Image (cartoon, rainbow, N blue to C red; front, side, top):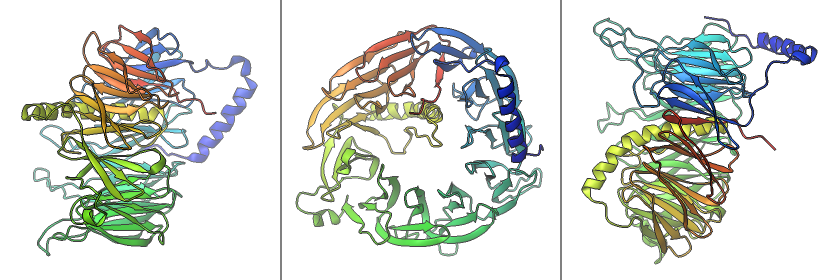
Length: 602
């Protein structure tokens, strides 16, 4: 294992800056400008496209199938993960993972960096100084030996491996502080291996100090944590486990939240979170962590717990069947959803918590005009001005309009041009398996290009349950757009009165819908079609069908001014304000993922 010393790299950085000042006349080639990079599969490579006239500039061959790509700070180098946990063609890897270091100026692969098996994450550290590559490893199977997890750390200044951290267990997730001074590796539990007589191994959190070879501390768990997150001030790490839900008292164990001090990696406290906690959410404005659970194995009353630092600041009873938590946009606080009610929880412990009945007896108490949701809430969308929220109803084609001022469900609206037949239902479910994986990588690429540590994607297999409604809204919040993936159309709804203004067909195999950053267009992606709808007229301005194959990805560019689509052999570009066709780059060898430089900050 290499020693990883931050102070050493500070010295290297000072010498580097001094060298630049003394040798400006012989400076290294600069990073390319005005280019887009596309990972391709047939053959594996990186296609380079200039982003003005969208002409193909060339292709850089890759030695293995790509899974993901990240641009280095400065934009000269591209790191391409190969043989990741899932390649872009959805194939399982047949060899250990690698990172290809691509020089975009020289247009060639400089070297490959070996990783462990099934690398599932490749991301830049918060300060951009390091590339973190996490390989969870693999369990022993037939002739394949057990491979424990490994975290490979690469300096983005030297492009050399500075450390390979090994917790000695099968990995699940990693988390680092902003400056990478502390690294946390969460490991899975392992059952007894009867052949090798090894195990069982408990789930564990291994804390590494970035300047030392061996772990700073190891904490084992009886139940494997399902989530972990850092506090905003980077002082505390929270781990939530779901315990064991059982109607038999001797087998039941409530879930818990373990609080670990970041500086030492040691446990500072643990709190009973209730039966089978569903989710843990950080409200960054209040710096509190909220945990949603139920009261007991047989009592499905919702329980909400808030923690700040190591102390519990609030406990609250909610309606029955707790489901999920959602952030409240740019407002302090969050929404707690159960099957019976929706609650907005502000970040002040003493502030009033508004309750909105969704189902059951509480609906009548909200007034004669209040409606029932008629099913479990699914996908949600808070509309601009914070006056209303759209909530998709699971297992139906309906979307509810919730009034956040009067605290009631105003109405439910049926979407789609017709009923969902059983054949359509099964067909959409089959499509969902491939669509969820494809949208995973599209979302991952977008998150990386925008500098976000989080990424979101549509999961079509029972979460939320099919039929699935994907939601978007106009910038002024007056119109709601609901994509029904069963009837393959967008229903346009007037939010004020709930009337259906029309339907727009988007082609078979509808996948996702989103609002362009300009707010001028609604963009819908289907298996073989891109549809753009203007929000001022609610008219379809673009219906693009590729000449060959499918639409693999649809997203806005980093500037937010263009809409980009990848088809089976081309990149297609539209103006994000008008929907006007801007250009197409053909002849791409099965493009799957678009990587673009970060937008310049004002």
